[in-house]
Image 1 (cartoon, helix red, strand yellow):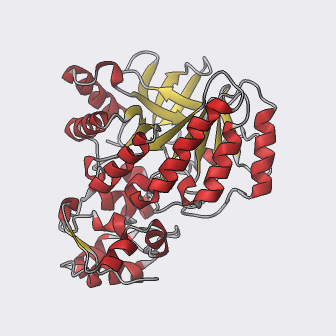
Image 2: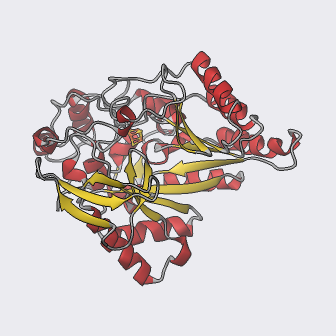
Length: 408
Ligand code: SF4
């Protein structure tokens, strides 16, 4: 590990003791945060000891470091955790639980199951909808989330996508040949692990494809490493968006930035400063939240999160049911839980038309979940395996489909 962690942030990100100016500039350097990530049990123990966190032995016993997946946690992310709370929502999303080993889900990532890659060899470009493609620009992230549906490529590093210049160029050529594609969703891993020159070059090339109207960039750096959103990056992305009006078309293009906040504790002053900085440069911000058991599965938590995001002019894009990723059963609620939360959100009259759709990501695309069970959308049990499922008449395929439900 590259550095020692003498930066103590006190609970609930209210204050931070930084011992000198140079340490402060180091702390706010996104590259330093990445280079100083905690990568294993020993790093983690060192972090706790060097920051004088009480009860190190007890904290070490809470987690399971024998997991085969990679661990990656920025010092900034760890500084947000309240270690006196065994159920801290940020720790629960990022540190390996002993429950991960006791689970039986055989369903692998959606990424592995689908055949909708437009570049089958490299598996960088995927299309589920006629007007949107998903483009993966990286296999790594600033920190790794335990519930990640991209585990195969990120945490597990089993089937990494080729994301080099040649592969990217091949994707550009494929998109150019498809006049119906209007949006490119740039994702990863986290595309914001790329340095500015590569990221900006790729975004510009995508925006310059005549039929592309919007490039979306999804990232969790807002939580993991908010210092990634530098003034320079904001200025250059904003400039690209403004320049697009001069590219010989009658309309400009837009860059939308996706956040992935799951809990109000994640809306740190640093994250909100990053959101406001990007907005100041004319970039549109939207949020996607995943429903996670014992982390944010209550009306009060989601209400507070959505209210704060709306106050920041962050559009509420999707509220997602956690996908059936192996080793994440303990983080999945039944679909019914999300329906109950959605009903209460509607009854609160706080959000009206600004509420996001509640969706479950099926291999075929995002299936919108109705507010209550019905004859076309109901809970069932699979006969042979006894597995709890949702059986539904898909509005995507028009066929009856199944989806693995979470446990109550
Ligand atoms: S940042 Fe996104 S892609 Fe990376 S581990 Fe978290 S959820 Fe997965």
